[in-house]
Amino acid sequence: MAIEPAGRNQSLAPRFLWLGVTVWSGDPDVEPTVIADRSPVTLARTMAVTIQEMLEDSDAYAGATEFLQSNPPPQDWVEPRDVDDWLEALREATPHPSFSFYRVPIAGGADGTNHGFVNRYLEQALREREQALAEGPSTRTSEGPAMMPLER
Image (cartoon, rainbow, N blue to C red; front, side, top):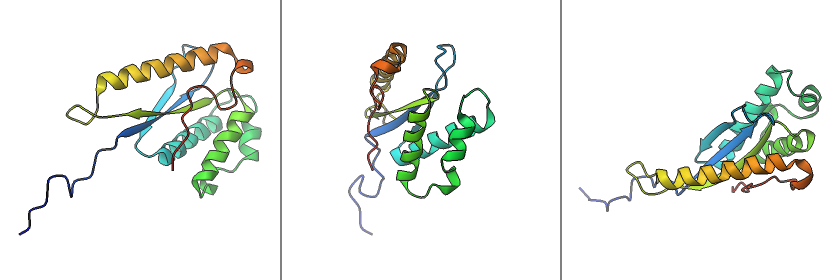
């Protein structure tokens, strides 16, 4: 029986966790939706499906019906680029719901997460996002503040 060095057959813990934040309206009392995943591709798809379902189920979003009719539904998304294209079309079509992605480093604690660092990072990212939303669309770039590009 061969003895393997520690960690060789164990899956390595990810060094980063991807967070997606969806802001549903400009009302600060409406809580954003935060979704986390190890894969930026899976995260983007989950966020897009969540947003798409909310647009279908709510009359709160002006132009949502037109947007959904002019963009392919989730069952037609084959490649990761299809999801990216849908999200970018949403960004161009309406200020809300809006979304952003964050790559958060993780390391440390018993579960692999340095909770203090992650909490500080998230607080800072959400503060920056709130500040950018308060500034209005005329002062923001088209990619939005604190946007981390998805890596494939």
